[in-house]
Length: 140
Image (cartoon, rainbow, N blue to C red; front, side):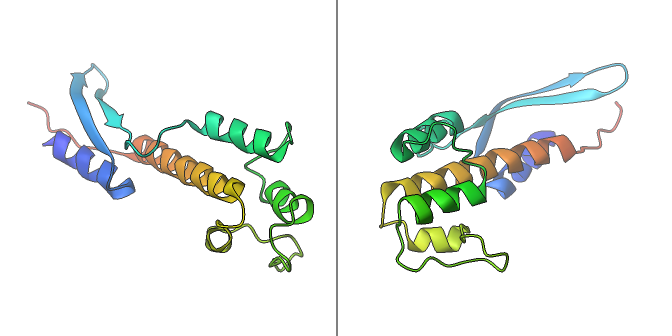
């Protein structure tokens, strides 16, 4: 049945996600599977709200939170949250998840950046999966 296949695909993205209000709409040239995804309770804010909080906390209104370079400059050059920050091979400040997680106790903004990235990754994975999902439906 389509419901269990879609549910399995959503669970593969994140175990905390569930679906409800599943509908199958048959059309002349194709059929649509329409459903709602329930966002986990622990995800309390939207990406936009988290991004605004990061910019306000950093006192940097034009900050591109998606830019590793700008986040690195903010955390390590401006805020100096690490004495000797880790650098990448291209001489940029390292802002990968593992390194930032190790620094999350240094300033609350680090946890916000990680939360923002996690939510963005979750939404991207869900969208990508939805766009690429293909269910073969046998005609009646």
